[in-house]
Image (cartoon, rainbow, N blue to C red):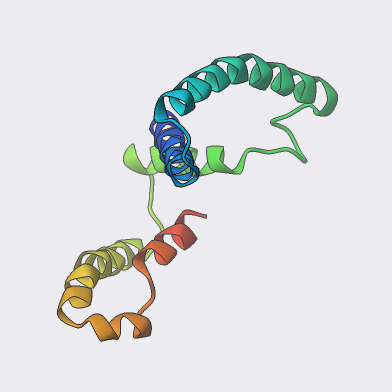
Length: 128
C-alpha cells in the first residue's frame, strides 16, 4: 500500500512540475533529466537525514510515532478478520454511493454542484 501511495505521489508531483515547466517554457527533456538526477541524489540525502534524526530523536517511539502505520495496521487486521466497529458498513455503502452518483448528478444538474460537498474533499477528509 505504501509503495503504491508513494509512486502515485511521485507521479503526481512530476506531472505538476512538467505542467509548470510548460507554462514557463522549459524544455521537457531538461526537466525529465532534472527529475532523474534529483531522485538519484535524494536517495542518499533522505537516508542520511533519516539516520541523523533517528540518532538524535529515537524515531518510531513517543513523541515521534508514525500515525499512518497505525492506519495500515488496522486495515490489515480488518482484512484478516478482525472485528469492525458497528455501523461502518452502512457508512461505507452510503458514501460509496454518494461518490458514484455524484458525477451523474453533476452531469444532469450542473447548477446543483454548489449545494453538495465535493467528493474529493470528503475523500481527503476521510483519509486524513
